[in-house]
Length: 191
Image (cartoon, rainbow, N blue to C red; front, top):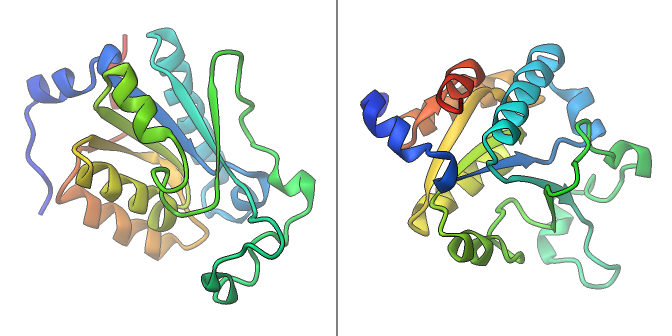
């Protein structure tokens, strides 16, 4: 069952002065593995352009490997971590001056970073999520945001995954708890 929310409430939640846009792990290696590259990139650019137009801060995340010898025990489960070439780790959309870039090592934007502090310092409570992968870092961070008292909003066509079924299942899970809308719907609200 999808969350029922009025347009008036959605417009209030998504006030530019109350919002921040997260572009989660849009690395070339991950982008090359998703099932809908062209549609995803078009939607992502639509959202980023809309955010910049109305002065919503844009925050890019980057996967940052742990220093050798300081890896958590969980690295044994994810052997690919840190196995990318440097060009694979480039972001497919380049941050611009004034954008924030957060290096992180976990599946939550709130673990091991100062993102929560930045949100609280800025007085912003709505976190709009885009990026890769829907069922991993996007959903984990959205749930964590909600647990911390922030309002996560998911842009359905500006998130993606290498696993279409997992992507769809994750969107269905999140629709029960968070606003989920398309890039064009968000762009209409951010005018």
